[in-house]
Structures are given as C-alpha cells and as structure tokens.
Image (cartoon, rainbow, N blue to C red):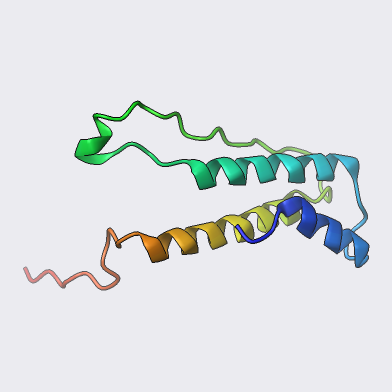
Length: 106
C-alpha cells in the first residue's frame, strides 16, 4: 500500500476538494485498518494449507448513510489503495489463470 486512506482524505480536504467530516474521517481510519488486515492476510489453501492453522479472513465493513455523505468517495479511495496492494502481490505470485485460455474446439 502506497498511502493511507486517511492521508489521501486529509490531502483532498486540504485542497478544498471536500469538506472534512468527523464521520468520514472515522470511516477512512476503519478502511485503513481493513486494508492493512487484507495486506497481512494469507488464506490457507492447497495441500500445505491443511497443515497450517486456519486463519479467519478479515471482516468487511458495512457502510450506510444519507445521500451525499461521501461513501462512494471513501470506497473509491479504499479500492485504489487495495488495487495497488494486489498489483504488488501479482508481481510476486505466479498467475493462477492464463490471460488467454486455450480455445475449446467442440
């Protein structure tokens, strides 16, 4: 992860792109924690996974609120952060699915 969601939120507020809101800031902090949990999570799978202790996946966040409160903005910031994490993982992990699967001839 390159930057935290809270820092991105604070920068946007400082530039005047949004009006800072305590509830939004608290949600940004919670999304930061979720992103950190996802970064550390390694599912136990495959044959060796049976030997490792079961690890519970990170618990998601349910977001609700009135229209115009910044839910989509914060989720966009979260996914931008998590997408960067997935790109890093993709570079270090072998692909599970080839980009162009072979054609099936019937």
